[in-house]
Length: 418
Image (cartoon, rainbow, N blue to C red):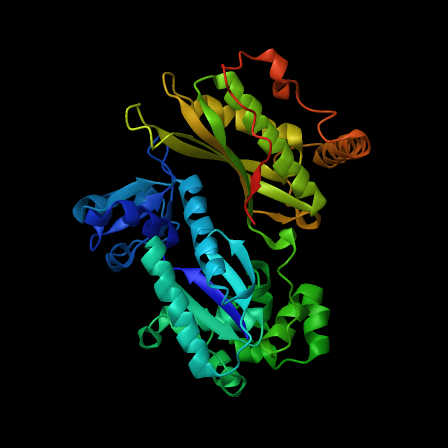
């Protein structure tokens, strides 16, 4: 059976691990900024109970926040990725799950060689309890005959308290379960397709699954057909490819601390170039760029600082020049003097397939410029592949141009979030 693990209110849950005093009080995580803008990205049940929702602009809900003493925490993407990696490690140690894959920072898929619903429930409950005990993060679990059915089972685990966070969807319960799931909640059905689907009289996941294969293929193509097959219990999706990842992270903990902005820029530029190369290899584009910095939390004798910031690009891209410029801007905003930095990284987020990019309506000449950049990036990739990686690179990545601190070791390898 296929399994799905989904962390509950993940960003808030991560923050509450280090702030247990806030448990039981309304808490939200937001991408706040210096102009008091930003939106709510995650919230706990207590915050939902007073009327707050994910996606609320902060300025619109200021009165609710003040009236109910809601704690607003700035988003810390790098911290959430570290917790996610810890969850991966803990599950892999058990050797209970096969083909375990991180789909996004808060979701995981895998398989278990077991069909008995009772045993599966016991196994998933064991995993659930292990993750909570070792990381402090509550998760919901689902199992089904395909990835889509497993994720749908997790939807039940989240919405029906009687399941206690674990739902199994065996073959004989599939139709009854799908009849209760709104079609808009089905994984793989995008917002652009919902209106067309609902106008066709399809209201539930079961309605969609029972439509003729030719109808699905004609209206929604290969992607819609894969979802249709999965809902009917036939596995049609593979998650081993990086193309399905929602983010790519390249980071490194330095061998020695550094307070040099030029060294940090050099390293971050290298990470950004490597991550962007990965984007092009998997035919993906990114919509957001995040940079994070952190000092050595084990050196309590030194001043501590950690922060991250994100830029949303006007157009999704795989262009190294555009992404490196975003990284430079983010470092300018994040960097603080008089701190010794131990870790830095780049996260490319909101990935999408390169064939479906939405161009900026207010820009001109985008098609020609996009084609020019694609030719340039292809030429660079071809040369580097032929003569060795980084034969062509940004000038800022050249170690000879900055005041490298004594004993600083350039990270020989980057870590990829997959």
